[in-house]
Length: 225
Image (cartoon, rainbow, N blue to C red; front, side, top):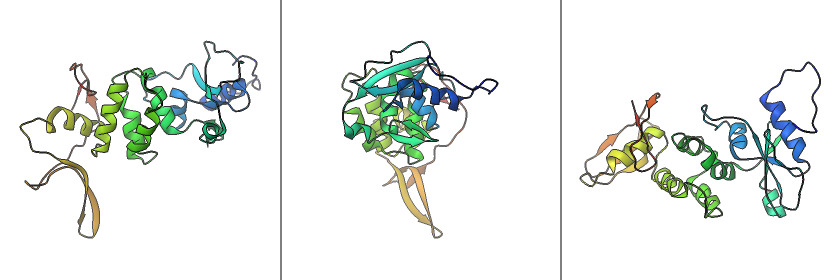
């Protein structure tokens, strides 16, 4: 990074590049956007790690961004600064801010994954993401993120569940379903993916690999198999 230095002969690492970006930003800077998602373990593998994104106070007119570091000016009071977390020794914006700010920077086909995984792993909740989104009225792709939050609120905890609910289970010919319904079986609590209450039918949606293609509607621009 400009004006930052490393010990010669030391292998370059993501941690080192993240740390140098923070050092370049100066006091009260924090990793943000897709770089923050990377630190939280939520960055889709197809997304690039360059440039590194940092957020600094609005009153700080230096440093300027370049091809290696994208500088964003947002922090303006102590309340926002108090939301900065420390992960792996690095200052990073809270996961909700990272999810919302990174949304336009991630490939549209990969955008749902970070939020769905963050909610499933209990790093955040749909309600907290919605509260963060309220501060971004002009966010690119905002309507799609609002829809994803609604689906997560309805119990979707995987990409396949998101697709299944939006593309199949919400069809007007089908009765309503509930997601992540707790049921005790044999003394153990399990959560049903999508339950048709009156019919007493549960639909489990599980899968690993998927193939995506444009469908031109909703947030599920693809199919999984």
